[in-house]
Length: 126
Image (cartoon, rainbow, N blue to C red; front, side):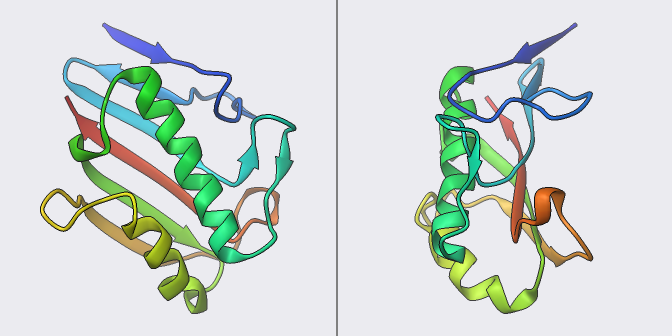
Protein backbone atom coordinates (compact mmCIF):
# COMPACT_ATOMS: atom_id res chain seq x y z
CA UNK A 1 0.00 0.00 0.00
CA UNK A 2 1.20 3.51 -0.75
CA UNK A 3 0.71 6.64 1.34
CA UNK A 4 0.02 10.03 -0.20
CA UNK A 5 2.00 12.93 1.30
CA UNK A 6 0.30 16.32 1.10
CA UNK A 7 1.04 19.72 2.65
CA UNK A 8 -0.22 23.26 2.22
CA UNK A 9 3.34 24.52 2.84
CA UNK A 10 4.27 23.48 -0.70
CA UNK A 11 2.42 24.22 -3.95
CA UNK A 12 -0.65 22.11 -4.51
CA UNK A 13 -0.59 19.88 -7.60
CA UNK A 14 -1.88 21.44 -10.81
CA UNK A 15 -2.77 18.10 -12.39
CA UNK A 16 -3.52 14.45 -11.65
CA UNK A 17 -0.54 13.78 -9.37
CA UNK A 18 0.45 14.12 -5.70
CA UNK A 19 3.19 16.12 -4.05
CA UNK A 20 4.78 12.89 -2.82
CA UNK A 21 4.10 9.20 -2.43
CA UNK A 22 5.59 6.91 0.21
CA UNK A 23 5.92 3.19 -0.50
CA UNK A 24 7.61 1.17 2.23
CA UNK A 25 10.87 3.03 2.94
CA UNK A 26 10.84 4.95 -0.35
CA UNK A 27 9.59 8.52 -0.78
CA UNK A 28 9.01 9.82 -4.31
CA UNK A 29 8.60 13.60 -4.50
CA UNK A 30 7.09 15.13 -7.62
CA UNK A 31 8.92 17.83 -9.51
CA UNK A 32 8.68 21.20 -7.81
CA UNK A 33 8.82 24.59 -9.46
CA UNK A 34 9.17 28.03 -7.87
CA UNK A 35 5.59 28.62 -6.79
CA UNK A 36 5.37 30.38 -3.45
CA UNK A 37 2.66 28.40 -1.59
CA UNK A 38 1.70 31.45 0.51
CA UNK A 39 0.41 33.46 -2.45
CA UNK A 40 0.50 30.88 -5.28
CA UNK A 41 2.75 33.16 -7.35
CA UNK A 42 5.95 32.29 -9.18
CA UNK A 43 9.27 33.47 -7.76
CA UNK A 44 11.24 34.49 -10.84
CA UNK A 45 13.31 37.44 -9.53
CA UNK A 46 16.57 35.61 -10.32
CA UNK A 47 17.64 32.04 -11.04
CA UNK A 48 19.01 31.90 -7.49
CA UNK A 49 15.68 33.01 -5.95
CA UNK A 50 13.81 30.62 -8.22
CA UNK A 51 16.02 27.69 -7.23
CA UNK A 52 15.78 28.56 -3.53
CA UNK A 53 11.96 28.50 -3.74
CA UNK A 54 12.09 25.11 -5.49
CA UNK A 55 14.38 23.73 -2.77
CA UNK A 56 12.18 25.19 -0.02
CA UNK A 57 9.14 23.53 -1.59
CA UNK A 58 11.01 20.22 -1.57
CA UNK A 59 12.10 20.84 2.03
CA UNK A 60 8.48 21.43 3.08
CA UNK A 61 7.39 18.13 1.60
CA UNK A 62 10.32 16.30 3.19
CA UNK A 63 9.47 17.85 6.59
CA UNK A 64 5.86 16.67 6.42
CA UNK A 65 7.08 13.21 5.44
CA UNK A 66 9.60 13.36 8.32
CA UNK A 67 12.50 12.65 5.97
CA UNK A 68 15.72 14.72 6.19
CA UNK A 69 17.70 15.82 3.14
CA UNK A 70 20.40 13.32 4.20
CA UNK A 71 18.01 10.51 3.15
CA UNK A 72 17.64 11.80 -0.41
CA UNK A 73 19.29 9.28 -2.74
CA UNK A 74 18.41 10.68 -6.18
CA UNK A 75 17.43 14.03 -7.66
CA UNK A 76 16.56 15.12 -11.17
CA UNK A 77 17.10 18.72 -12.20
CA UNK A 78 15.47 20.09 -15.33
CA UNK A 79 16.69 23.45 -16.65
CA UNK A 80 15.36 25.70 -19.38
CA UNK A 81 18.97 26.51 -20.31
CA UNK A 82 22.28 24.96 -19.23
CA UNK A 83 23.58 28.51 -18.78
CA UNK A 84 21.76 28.37 -15.40
CA UNK A 85 23.72 25.30 -14.26
CA UNK A 86 26.37 27.01 -12.10
CA UNK A 87 23.96 29.26 -10.19
CA UNK A 88 21.39 26.49 -9.70
CA UNK A 89 24.16 24.16 -8.53
CA UNK A 90 25.32 26.69 -5.91
CA UNK A 91 21.86 27.02 -4.35
CA UNK A 92 21.10 23.31 -4.67
CA UNK A 93 24.45 22.43 -3.06
CA UNK A 94 23.66 24.48 0.03
CA UNK A 95 20.97 21.91 0.95
CA UNK A 96 23.35 18.92 0.90
CA UNK A 97 26.75 18.16 2.32
CA UNK A 98 29.42 16.40 0.29
CA UNK A 99 29.19 13.15 2.29
CA UNK A 100 25.41 12.75 1.90
CA UNK A 101 24.78 14.35 -1.49
CA UNK A 102 22.49 12.21 -3.68
CA UNK A 103 23.02 10.84 -7.15
CA UNK A 104 21.71 13.30 -9.74
CA UNK A 105 21.26 14.22 -13.34
CA UNK A 106 20.80 17.70 -14.73
CA UNK A 107 19.30 18.15 -18.17
CA UNK A 108 18.19 21.06 -20.30
CA UNK A 109 14.69 20.68 -21.67
CA UNK A 110 12.65 22.44 -24.32
CA UNK A 111 10.07 23.75 -21.86
CA UNK A 112 8.92 23.56 -18.24
CA UNK A 113 5.52 24.18 -16.62
CA UNK A 114 4.47 27.83 -16.43
CA UNK A 115 7.60 28.88 -18.32
CA UNK A 116 9.90 28.43 -15.30
CA UNK A 117 13.65 27.90 -15.54
CA UNK A 118 14.15 25.04 -13.07
CA UNK A 119 12.22 22.01 -11.82
CA UNK A 120 13.59 19.45 -9.36
CA UNK A 121 12.20 16.08 -8.25
CA UNK A 122 13.70 13.60 -5.80
CA UNK A 123 13.64 10.12 -4.31
CA UNK A 124 14.51 9.40 -0.68
CA UNK A 125 14.86 6.25 1.40
CA UNK A 126 13.96 6.48 5.07
